[in-house]
Image 1 (cartoon, rainbow, N blue to C red):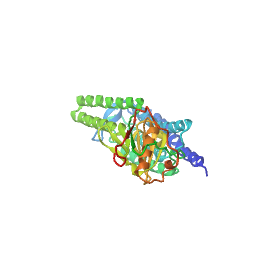
Image 2: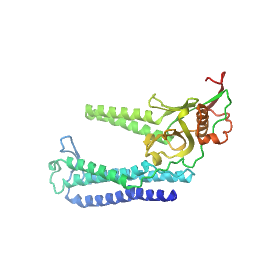
Image 3: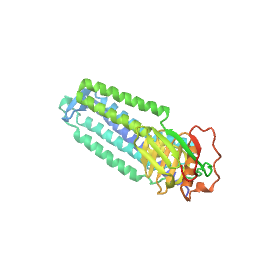
Image 4: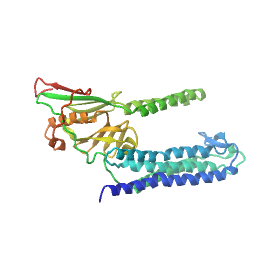
Length: 370
């Protein structure tokens, strides 16, 4: 059986679960809510406070538009993931499929189910009411909707074919940088988001800061909660999106700009090194520091990437400029660290690199010491 057949089956299942079924459910739900509009109080309840009673009001169509808009935003995620995978195919990257490709459609279906049950519930409790303030709590609908969504998400994930095809499969192993007996090499670079992702992250943090400032004018406690949220998001942004990288005789190290987390792979632990085109959303379900099925991704952007396989089978993927040079230095370090069955040891050495800003070569005074 060829690889294309199971991929086609998995893609078809993801299309139905992540787009066709949730779009149909959303359409039916919106039609029902629109038919109920004449029976809704005006103004209708649009927000419920901690007591479970309505404390915010607006036009009857407010909840319809709000819940439908969030559902449509969720429905954009699977097509965006499919677009990234097709773009990878278009530029000659290997086909890939992973748990993230099952998770995203399942998450979308579960989210739409939850949101639309909440929308239907908030409308149901207000039908034929004279005053929305007397309609009572919607907590049961809220909890029931999210529980149903979680169950649907898990079921949708399990119903899809279990398939894993790594994008680097079939790619040739990286070749070692040729070094003399008294030479060692080091490669220094960074992992960083693209300009577009960087601007988006900045906009999110500015928006959270503005919301926190506004919340202080409403309720000091809410303002401090907003500040805490901003701090967590800002710290997570820096910790998961920017890493300094050093590759040398000791192996690979990627360190967050704040000093933690740190990812290290000893040279002797490197089993294989491959360069490949990485699509973060398609392979990992998102950008930044990601984990998926034994694979760790340092993928704040898509494009050229370094794929390192350890001897225990675990994989680290990092998107960075100059991946081929970085791979050549790492393979040389792995070869020098001891005997290896790495395929890279069986191919000719890479051509010597000169005038590469990330790469340095030094001559040791003693061949046995650094």
